[in-house]
Length: 384
Image (spheres, rainbow, N blue to C red):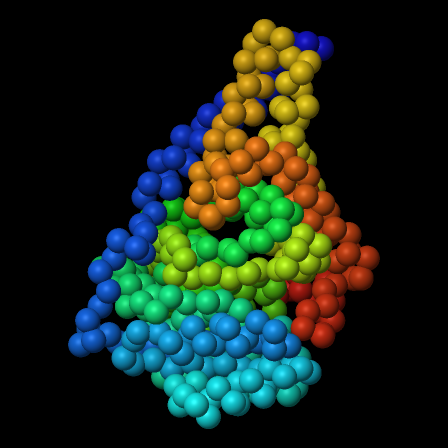
């Protein structure tokens, strides 16, 4: 039995060594927006910023203020109120009276065969005119020089599509634990640097900021291709790659920031629709993700007090390397480095989020999103 557990810990340790090396080499290739010189006025192409919001009255004013304060000569903001029942529409109307660059629209009824968000973004696109399009959310804050730097980077790299990895705003202990660990999972699971390689099938998409050429967006099929896709932001990146277009990822730092959810409880509830959907609603895959997460992040910590000899060496490696990765993620996200040591707790939280998303979706027979229920059968048919 001792030999068996030593072998298990050895496999985990060597897996971490290989993963850490790939991570270290890959992250170094991701460019930073901070090092990009902003475009001059004469170099700035027209841009359309598009977002869809439903019942966003609490967060919308702060976000829209930053979008309308951008230091950019030629842009418009198309904001679609997706059947809101709060003051979202009134907030947009009042802001539009003060700034003609904001062009609000409203969706009163959702046609069949569409999820609310993809449909609203499609409506926004059809009202837009920019050479470049930015897809974002109604709670995201932009730095004034964001567009000048982002487009400069995309044009320098000859990318048709650019995803920016921004900075989440985190206030509570639970938020910092969960999001720091989520950052580790994102890096090691999606390997975003692969999206920058035109020969790789790797792709990345983040809802807070995706910049895409209008011609490229039309070539990939617009949001009509994502009509029933729950994780439409990620799959936008996938469709760009499948269309043979050039995609890229960069770190945006504080130029793109968002307070995802207030508190750990809201973070868990807010991802209910997403995590099972991210597997294409495959039960075997999400089970493997939960088992793999516990094995790689939690088991070595639990084994450490009981390990001896080579088993102890392997356990130490399997504990030290994720802590090291977590430290780098914590620094990048603006959390104290000490949160690197909370990764076992973060792993348990994420596993519960994965399990909860699956249980709720299967129990309900589908997903309720933006006030509309979608059956699991139609969601599976819409997976991109």
